[in-house]
Figure 1 (spheres, rainbow, N blue to C red):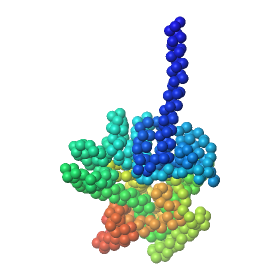
Figure 2 (figure 1 turned 180 degrees about the horizontal axis):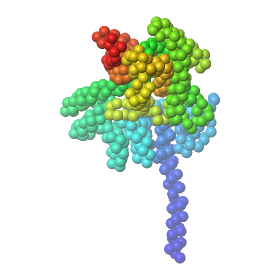
Figure 3 (figure 1 turned 60 degrees about the horizontal axis):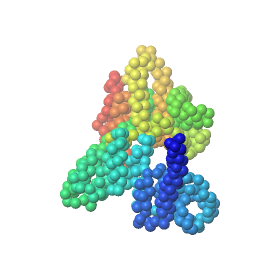
Figure 4 (figure 1 turned 30 degrees about the vertical axis):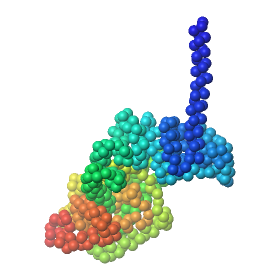
Length: 538
């Protein structure tokens, strides 16, 4: 009986003692928070470090508000609050409990001042608090935060997190954060040399900046290592910059390929200079806009499928418009290139004005589906998903068109008309039908190009005008009517543009490319891959 009473008594003591201990800890934490209101800027780092040592997640919103400059102290008693403006007053929130604490006039509170040093200390403290979080994304962001704000005082926190971290990507960030912090610490020279090697292996622009800063304060024994690491990183960065330019060039080349591939077969088969080709691209982009508007208002769950729905619709719409243009205007002007050029230019102006009247002159918003949003790093390259998918799409369209030309009866007839129109007509090929279908096919492909371009460019009535001249350059440079020439020409001009632009600028770069193409055509009037045929050779 005595033992039972003893057990009950101990339990009661524990039950009453635990809340008291928790209350004392809470009050101690509140004292630390309130101390921020009276602290000097020069001592603010120490107060932030003391809060971080508590390890209590309740201080996260306090530190975030402090870093954002939204933490206030009441003048009467120095108590600290989170605030929100409500007219002439401030709505007060208890920083630890999150409960409402009423309102107060703005004059009754004083904003706690912060500077860049305080913000760095806040980032470091927040990073240390979340480095051990079970949430992988929180740990990743915390490691990035600590790496961007090196602080020797954070070394124990970083090393503690490294000992338990299993994720490879976060470990790399923590290793680099530790190396950065060591360079600002009083650790032995051997540890600093190892830190320099870790940053050298990372080879990032951040590492370049960190080592450049460390070089100014390093002793003579360490300077040689830092200078060697800087030279290695600069060389690596130059190679990655060249690779990034090639990627940008391939990206631009895929856009040019999409815009020019329809023009290549139209120009090659029919010999028509179609100045309205850019407007087919524009109509394809507006078809995408309309599809997305309908999906947004009626079927929002299908938004990720909007491009898959828009592609066949854009092909049909622009193909039908192209067929109408060929049957209604162009077929009466064969053999009259100047009149054809003027007529198609007039049609392009009509289409632009029609779209401007229906949709207005302003740019229209076309959204990216989730699978085309964002980017990822590939070594030192930054690859955006929308550009990557456009390259894949351009090559898919190219392969499909190549299959059509090489493996189908329609493609055989198109190639026959391209190489020798009179002979094709004499053996029974109905060249007017081939012309009409070819023009419709070229226009349909331009519409599909508009769907892709809507993901990376502004959708406006002038969208096609930005690509028509470049498209003609690609076709002429690659070889009229030759698909492989169009592919090589598009990617070559895209890469050449991106290597010239950093030195000459965008406008002068295009001029230089045009001059180079003119000089090239002087030597090879038929382009890179000239078509062969009796009519051509005659």
